[in-house]
Image 1: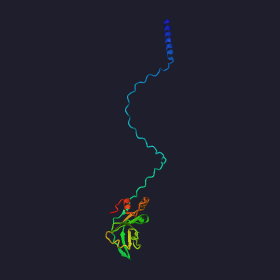
Image 2: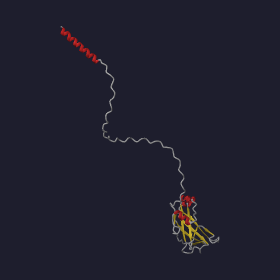
Image 3: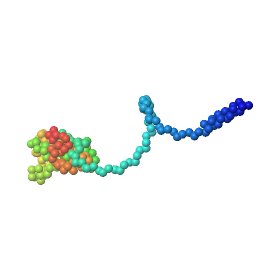
Image 4: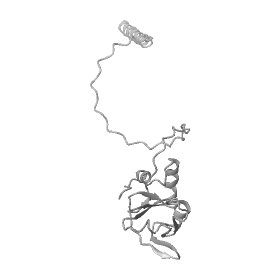
Length: 205
């Protein structure tokens, strides 16, 4: 009987101790340990797909205007000029007349442009047309009339002046837009050498 009682007491004591151990409150966590060494860098991943294009931003304000450039030389586009040409004059009612077919003279040229005509005498001097009072005589003149595709040159009282085969004529046809630019530079259209220099051709050929 005593042995059984002792056994019961021991079992009861063991259960009591186990119960007290289970109910023991856990303590606070300890401080964090030192950081470990950095591991090796991993392999680089593949390039991702390109994202969609973003929307266009709003137009910014207009900047200030730049300084005005210097005035340029007259352009040579569409300027037509002839070589020195020998013309045949014929008598027409007391006047000596030559008709020169020139396809470059259009109605637009007549309305907006300019046709300069020059005469080179046998002495080599160049004179712009029209000419009045050539040697101080009011009866002497050389004028011209323009029409689409044609120049009519009329001389009166100058048959002796234009009798040599060395006399030559030439024209320069200047379109309206080029003419406006030439006038801005104050180009003297009666001066063949100035005109030739401005438009890039030889005054002598």
